[in-house]
Length: 228
Image (cartoon, rainbow, N blue to C red):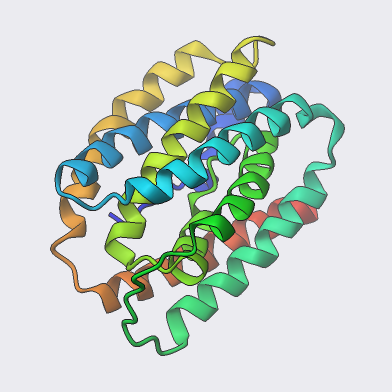
């Protein structure tokens, strides 16, 4: 509904189920990719995907995801989680509380979105997330999409990123296939049903809801960083 699949909230449970951070990362990013694909398909059918932005942001997202997944064992998880938590909490408060008048852009800043896409892809690939929670504010603030189109566009980009990350983890046996099947059973219908609800909610309410979700997810990451 918000253009997010919230793998950040799922990841701790996947870690418990798999017993391995590496397997959890590969499994979680695959579930996120499936949910993003299901939701993104519905958004695309309803005309809420900007394919020009996708063409600019998907390739660097995929490249970043592959690089991040390959370096997953060499990067401090505590450092990654702390950085993500900071950005999420700041973005959530800013998006939810700062008054924003609709300002449609005739010329979207897709090039700037490409830079964000690579960095977000690398972070997500390293920790097993498609990180739509970071990309969504970039699409709204930096690129200039409205929330509804940003939601659909974000899911499509996240799908490509997730598939690339999953494929990379699968080559090093970083996937728990039983947990993956169970996760897909909920993620696919959840992503589709959430996407159906997007067009029925006022944009201001979507912004507020997105801001709250970002803050909550940011706190989860902060707690994870503190434990690390």
